[in-house]
Length: 75
Image (tube, rainbow, N blue to C red; front, side):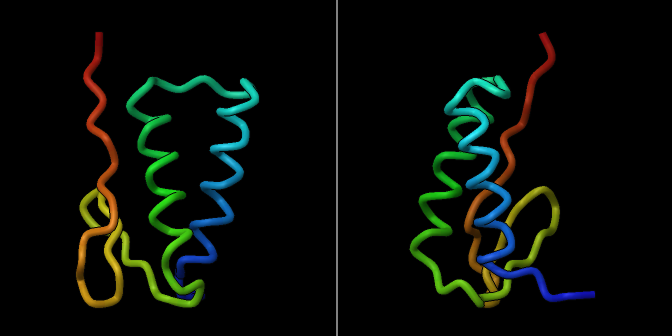
């Protein structure tokens, strides 16, 4: 399996952000905020840095937390 890196996730989440911005998708506000903040953080990291996904969170190769998926409460 290919190593998942910043570039991989940045491309995915930039597309998601674009779809949210133009109204194609309309997730909950906390998901929109997560997407926006995650794209901002990833944009500042080296594109080839490995990203580790575990326990609903994204970590860099050194184990530092980058972002955590928002917990969505049911209405």
